[in-house]
Image 1 (cartoon, rainbow, N blue to C red):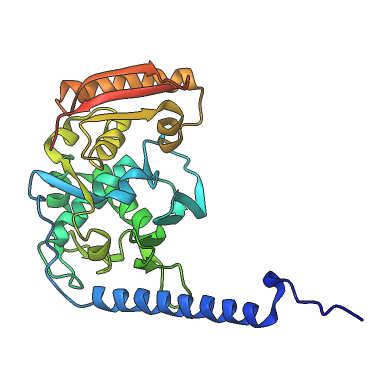
Image 2: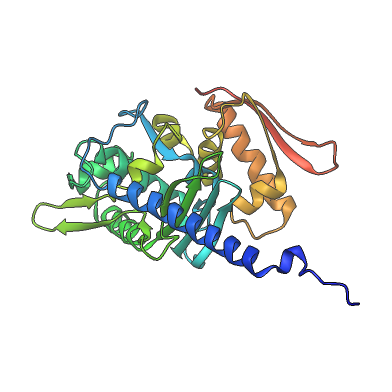
Length: 305
């Protein structure tokens, strides 16, 4: 007499079909939520960011924490192709284009501030000399060329970004699924030579990335006084956390800064920037110390609110 055999639980055909069906249903639900979020983001509405004004700029936390913008040296910059800049249980951020610098961050934050003068989906017209003055920059031939090249770099740099809520549901998703296009740092611009004016086109989906106050506020006056790009980079990072006491390992800070030299050289640069941030009263009591696990970390007290 033979004993009937039973297919192992994990190999049962019905169970496998059910699992596949459930997975497809979850993917469709996730896609539907992403499509709905994108459709909502395209409705023209005022672009209002509480806390941002003439003396304060804003940058989304995910962008500020990543190395999308970095204190890289002038000249040659690496070319990214779907590079992962930030990845975690609630975020996936990829970028494509030439590495962006802190100069690009200045242009981008000022452009997004100027977008608040118009509805999302509408394009503000900005005189290029006024644009530069608003950034504390001189006007003239080389400055105009610098601005124009920076605008082109931002228009060419695209993001693939998907953020999820704590329960795992999709908050927004751009460029992650085939039906949603990537998002450019600047959607585009037109330059009118007779008037020396730019027409800026910001993708309205940025409103969702800035949504729910998920952005860092940047003291613009203090930023314009900074002489070191790493200081500017750290200022953005500091603003992403409400913690008064902040700690970051030197390895993480070095990687985020896209610094490819020796650690001891980076440490000298870091100490110089921490001193500058302390002098500008962005932080207090900055120091580099050895953590309990033996690695070096930078520690400071946040002063800005």
